Amino acid sequence: MRSSTNEPGASMTAVAYAIASIPIAVLLALVLKRLSIGESTTFIALLLLPLGVWGIASGTVSEFSAGGVALKFREAAKSEVKLLPLTDVVQDFQSIEKGGVSAIEGLTSTLTPGRPVALVLHLGRPGYYVPSAVVLYLQALSSFDPELTLVVTDAGGKFAAAADGRAVMSFLTGQNDFEAQSRFREALDAPDASRLLQLPGFTSEAIAANATNAEALTKMDQLARRTLVALDAEGRPKGLAKRDAIVTYLLVQLTSDTAKAP
Figure 1: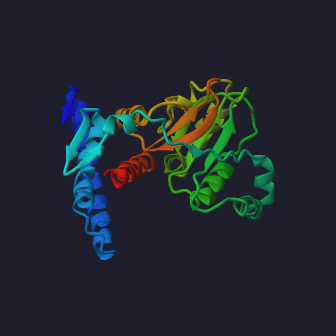
Figure 2 (figure 1 turned 180 degrees about the vertical axis):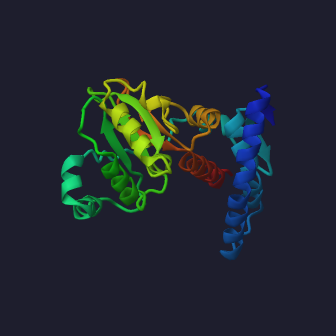
Figure 3 (figure 1 turned 90 degrees about the horizontal axis):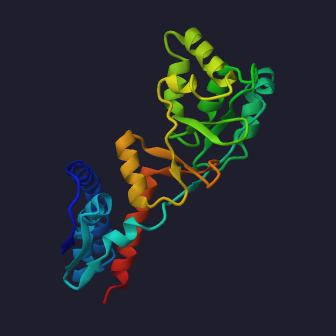
């Protein structure tokens, strides 16, 4: 087993990822047993999956070999981040306010269930966005993506801020909803994101679209976020990077490499 030193905080985070991956390893082992795939090296590889996730997240393990199975964790961690396509659903919210729920239903009928969705708004358009209409959009779109992301760009289309859609809905429909909606409207009317970033749940943090999986997981852990907006070289939203999707992708890569092992 090859290893390298790392920070204690990163190791604790890596342990959490490894624990979360144990049920996946057990499930895969049961499936292989049911299919009468009894090769010992395959089961050894499955038992190593939690260790693999630990190695990916912490960068501590470079290579682990046992029973003829070699898992190269560092290479998988340094591969390009797994991106999910960003669905830009910017609409004329004032017309939605007039058209009612039927107009929103027309929009959602064009979306594919199970694929990630982001509602994208633009700063510096005074009076254009009605908070109550934004709530209706978020409620409708969250049925397609429970982890719906609200993305805000500046007038030129460059990333300014983002928030979890559920957090925004909670803020806009809370006990002080009138005050919250007024603050939200004023923040969107402004030409920059300074006011918006003062609202609960909003962040200006993002990752580069060419970030590595390890970099994405590390930043998500530091910010306590499950989703980050990925930006192109010009700072425009290109996609969404989701923690669960990245971890699943890495596990699939590791098991694929294991299947090819002699």
